[in-house]
View (spheres, rainbow, N blue to C red):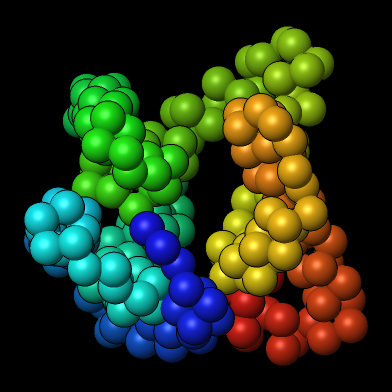
Length: 232
């Protein structure tokens, strides 16, 4: 997808508005209805299918980022899942559907990426139908207390450091999502490597670390405003 400057500059503002509307809806106990969670997941997958294969693939229309990725209908399911699990006093639910469907959806992600790559399209974005479906099943699996208890059984020091890093990044994750476009665009013009994979690794790690540094600085200078606007 070609992300024009106007699109990615407007995208965070649209997401912030969607966030406020989502929190309002969730506080109205919409998240307690399983049908609404599943329904919003179906809507997200359907919208991304139309966008990737009908609008991009068939009609060849290049939509602005803010139009196809800024709407509440694309992301409500993730807010609903987080809100629903966050309100649980004990996060002990059946993992059977998530254990079964997570690897299946991951396989779909690989197949879809191979398909899009064979068509000359950038397949690394998470904005694909299979990616959304995979995330819907993978997130509850990761947030379960049964899975969390396995972390404490890990004896490897390297894995413990990795889990600590992931947990730390998770505290800044929504803020990183909102501001990463402002950093990765200029960073991409500076980081130049002949190998595409090495460049991708450097860009991702550099973007995450710079975002965390900026968010940490903003949190120290403007804690209340950073919490309201960026969720950190």
